[in-house]
Amino acid sequence: MKHPGFTTAHLGMLLWAMLIAASFAAAAQISQSIDPILLTGLRLLFCAVAFSPQLLLKGDSAMTARGLFGHGILGLLLAVYFGSLFEALRYTSAVNTGTMFTLVPLLTLVFETVLMPDSNLKQRVLPMLIAAAGAVLLVMKGSTHGDLPSLYALSVYGVGCLAMALYSPLSQRLKAGSLKGRGAVGMTFWNMLFGAVFLLGFCGLSGGWRTASLLTVSDFFWLVYLALFATLATFWLLHRAIGVIAPSSVISYIYLSTLFITMFHWFWWRQSPLLLEVVGATLVGIGMLALLMSSKRSMALAVKN
Image (cartoon, rainbow, N blue to C red; front, side, top):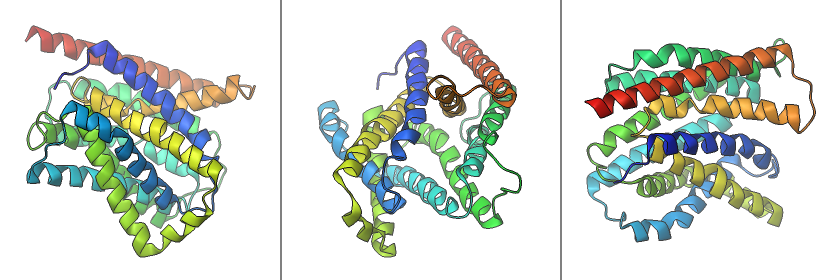
């Protein structure tokens, strides 16, 4: 499997952050009366279908029993994350879930320490903490006093955040074993397919599939858009970057998504920047620049060795 270059991988993740930021506005266009887990399952299924021709062209369709098991675990992690997010949103606000999600890169670093020991791990802790602090300030600007998450929502989404944090380092670990040689196309296709199976299976048991009759042409259009650009493209870019950039650094690009959303409000909606936003944006910029420099130094050392 051919990996992209250092600069290409980081530029790809910059695009990833932009696509993630744009997905929130697109998701808001879909009717709220449709079961969100059904919508996510369909998104993942559309991704797998759309990538199937590319999979055959790449010759990445061969699969062993161990490989299927590995993809099944990764697909289950995706299903757990999305399922926990939608369940938590029934009991708390998007601000609270957004704040909790800023912990995912730091949790990813913990899993990376266990699954992929590296002497350079400690160099990423401070930059990630700085970027995380900035992202929290950007997310919390919309919070209100007393808007605290329930213990149930905190616990449920906490499990989902752990699943998402485990996803990237476990992907890289499996690619060194049972999924060795599996490219970004194969990883994206199989993980999306298994994630869709788990989520749609849950909808079949819960009865959420009945809301499919409420889908309109407009809903279907936005669903396809989200599947192609907010899911398929982002996970392909993520898997393409893993292996060139450390998993914790890869997922840290979510902080840039938070920054892009804020900047969208500044420049598109002509909202005046708040002091809290300016401080948060500055911290995110400093933290991500430090992470970039750390990745560059690690790459230089790897080339020398």
